Image (cartoon, rainbow, N blue to C red):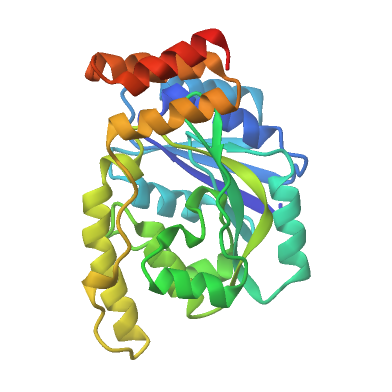
Length: 298
């Protein structure tokens, strides 16, 4: 077996089926999908059990709620392949993701961590942004050292097992930003890269860590970068240089998603975003305009 796919799930029922389907429909098929249910209390356990019955590649582990970091380390420990890929229960892998990443890793043995560019989608799956992530090791490492942990997108990552184990896997001190810490340590022992083609639909929603844990992530980044500076023999890290956290205001997020949905002609999603914002701010003229555009279809 060439590839082990690692996923941690905690109450991920809302989007889990789409994520599972996108993995199991990959053109590259020589993989196992190891899912750790992290003490879910919703319908995730039953949904996962159903997938395991239908596809022998799906292996389910269960643990008391301990967080994503512990779940991913447990999945890695149970895995068997020389390559490890990440996936989250609210995202969607495009069909050739694994095929293209495995081929690149085969052709570039010096690369130990490989990501891809992604398409940002809203909670209803509407595309609204195509970020231009850095592609080369030097560009990625520079962005990481500036505090941009998203230089490699966690659920789009593929790693060599030996490199992952050499740096000690995920550091369980970090219940969030664990990927940022791991990427920095892996950058110190091997080469990093991103594929230019977007191969993952990265779903943004108000319950995701980037929204719900933005301030916590900022504090952890200071600690992680301080440790990286020490390891690399650099002067102490200056927290004032950290980039601002992503927009986490629900109203502003739905506003951006709504207008993007209009541009993508997903008028149903646009109406939902408009109504949610109108309920929060009934006098918001722009949201009534958004609603009008979504009803008229332009």
